[in-house]
Image (cartoon, rainbow, N blue to C red; front, top):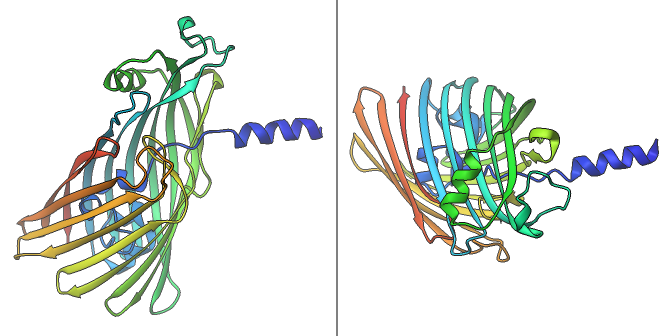
Length: 335
């Protein structure tokens, strides 16, 4: 009985963590370099920091889509990700849906017993994998004091996981092959929790995502892909009306598109006119031993008030091939 328990435990802990970093959702957040845990004041707080709904507008509706890809000079590593979000929030309650896709290519020895691997790899090749998750959540917020608020997003997660092995080819072809893999479906329940403290013009936030670390089996249960638990803290300072600076720091290592990441992010937002808001920022991976370690990523974005309370957001993420580059677009209705 003891041996069986140990075997099960080893199987569970062997599940590889999966690449779904914070920055995959949120055009406004990405435009600020990803420094958003203490800034989130619209429905995107459902994803970024559930507690921050209490500090935002009376009502907000957000539709968002973003895409990023990393194709380093090393042909054995590459990754792409996309995220779409639809959320509605009021100060004490939020409801939302978001879809995350992550596709990765990484060097890997091919196990001799893997019948799905090409026979001509002779033990060496690349592992291609893809995970698509659909999250449906309800966010609840509670004030603890006049300055401190906590919140949680309780969510149902449906996932489709796929993995396999391939011979060395150009990164874009391998990413395309990974996206075409046939996956297996699974369902889990999970939660995100957050807290935010407000003192005058200073806000400090903390978030834990994927508390239960939902995991999904690939076809035939050959692999298990796990959504790793993530810890992140941030602070934001309002320097003047419409002018915010912020900083975020990952408190744990998180799987990225080409290796592990522990990001530091800094950003700012400024209202230039009644209808125009601009943003900018940067982030970098503080892990020196990873493919994109210390590689800076720059971001720029802005919003235009179309009419009434409807904003259209856009952002671009740029940098070297070692780091993710991409874009995002969103619509936000706020009052």
